[in-house]
Image 1: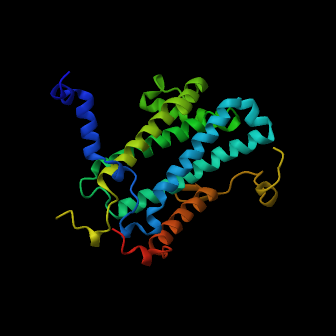
Image 2: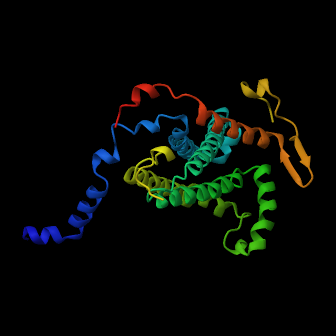
Image 3: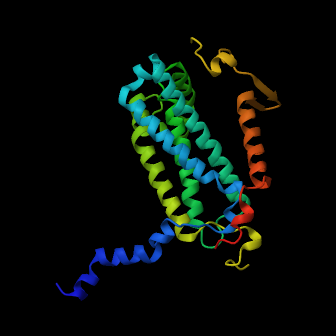
Length: 208
Length: 60
C-alpha cells in the first residue's frame, strides 16, 4: 500500500482531524488563562468530582443490592454517600449553570458547549428521578404513584412506566449513566477545544 | 428507623417535613435552605478573592 493510499484511509483522516482540533497540549493544558483564577470557575470540576463519587458509590450499591443497602450499616453508609454526592452534584451544577449563564458562556462559538451542558443537566434530572423511584422503599413507592399521573397525562406512561421498578432501575443504572457520562465527556472536550469562556471585559475574540 | 451515630444524633430527622405556604407556593424548609445556600454560594464565588490570583496574572 502506497503512502498516498494510507493517507486517504479514514483512520488517517480521522486521526489528523482529531489531532488538528485537539492536540495533546490543548486536551491536557499545563496552564489556564489568568481570569480562570476565580471561585466561579471551580464548580464545573466540582460537579465532575461529585459525578465520580456518584458513579463509584452506585457501582458498590449494584454489587450487593437493595437488601444490603437497606439492612447493613455499611450499606446505609454507601447509600448515604450516593445520596449526598448527588446532592453536591446538583448543587454544584446549578451554581455552575448560573455562573456560565451570567457570563453568557455560549459566546465565541461555544454554543455546542452550552447545549451539551444543558442536555447533560436534563439527563441528570431524569437520572435523579429514576433514582428516587428505584430506592425500593415506601418513599420510592409514594413518589412513583404520584409521578405516574404526571407522566400519564403526557401519554408517555406507555413507554416510561414509573411503577415498573425493573424498567426504572435499568434506566437509572444503565441508560442514564451512559448518557450522563458520554454527554459530560463531550462537554469537557468542547471546553478543551474552544477554551474557557473569558469574562466580558477580556472578550476580544467576539465582536458585536 | 433507628437513629445512628453522627448527624442523626445531632439533628433529629425522624419527623414530618416542615413546609412554608404562601398563596399558591408551597415549599419544604429543607428545599428552601438548599436554594438559599446555592444563592449564597454563587454570590460568594463571584466576589470572594481567589487564593494565588495575583501570582497567576502573568500566566498565559
